[in-house]
Length: 152
Length: 202
Image: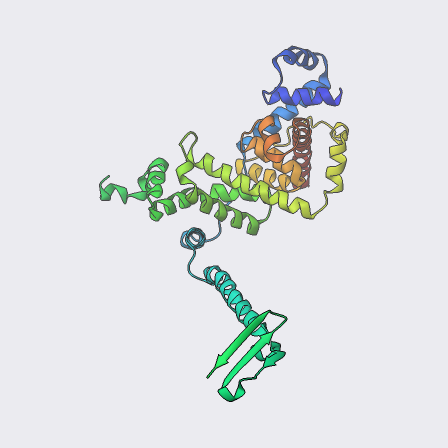
């Protein structure tokens, strides 16, 4: 008997053998004693196992077993509710933090730019104070092309 | 439904309890758990062969069923629907565990083919003359000696009533492998039961 024939005998026992192969396998069972014995063994095993499924019994009391399930149900419900509607926490705080940091960064940049601008005194390399007595000052910066007159 | 009838959980049918549970009645659901917990646990234990794991998976199955009660259409019985959930959880768990450990040598040999050919055919009925309880015990003992791969296919076929094609889909193997494993599992069961019978006689 080949492995293929053995599997076909099993498929016959399980009612899963293709209709076209049934007659051939039936002929084999009639002609081959070993095949017929295998068929009996497989049929008996199938029947006896199906009819005697091992029984399991939960050792915990009804109340304890249920309390564990109930706790898990509640935990998962809380987790699902939290996922659907998150409470203000770090994530929502971060949502505000990002634009706030952006605004602060712009403000700092502007401030730094202003402080970095050369002061009038620093750039006023060419100072004309011909009218000092008249309480007026003139600053000129060639670099910037600016002239400032200060009259008291 | 009148409250007096609704509160009579022990005499309610599974369908009634499912209906009330869907409305959020946890007491009705608790009645369903109580009614079917042993069967669900037994199915998990059959697949996992570990009480702690089976208990955990059976409880997880109840949590899943509570969350999916709206999906239960009543095409099969509630018990069948529940066993399907626990079996799927067990298969997922087995897949996760498989990734972590190598297959046994015995299974590798069987997968290469041919082992079952060398097993002697049991002429005598190994279960003859045994009482139901004793037989159940022996079958449980013998199933515990099968490899996980063989036990899974055998349990899905014999206890879950799945066809070869459905088992192949669920386990992620070919139909040929399903047949080969089922054939080997049955032949090994016959041999183990015969051996157990001899041991008890001695």
